Length: 172
Image (cartoon, rainbow, N blue to C red; front, side, top):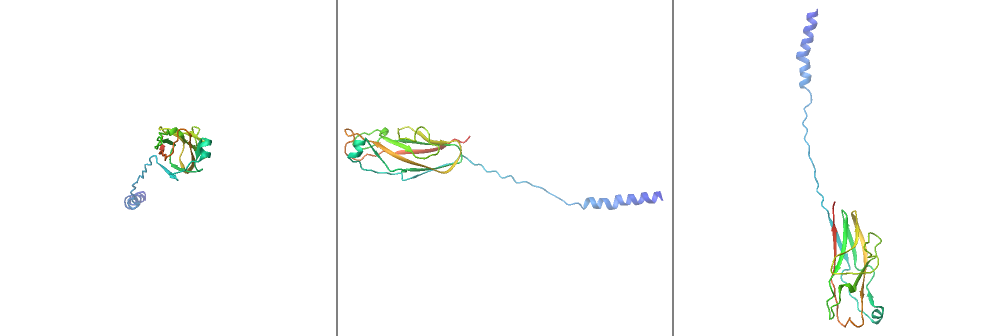
């Protein structure tokens, strides 16, 4: 009887268990890696970039001519820390009017730097007017120009200066 039991156990081990082992589910696993490289990116949009005014006696008496509030308006998008700067050429015209006669202020309540919440003279070098250590979306910087006037120097004619705004990112 012991031999018979042993034979049955051997038969089970040889015939039934291997079928169960071979009947296991087959499986193959593969992976896919998705990589996205996001560089520093920014966008600057200027609304009302080209402005023109005609002086009058009152503006000469005041010593300046102010342009409309919110013109130009600068809109900033950035996905990292950013800096907005401005510079101006000298005026072209009958008198070599310096760039420093053109003043700018940023009327935004956000991220204005270097005293540009009040009028500040522009120069031929970039001056930071706003910055932030994070990204922003559609942040508006309504600005205003003021041109200094002098009865003795500003002879009749048309004067123009080119203001260049630069938005830069500094991804870290």
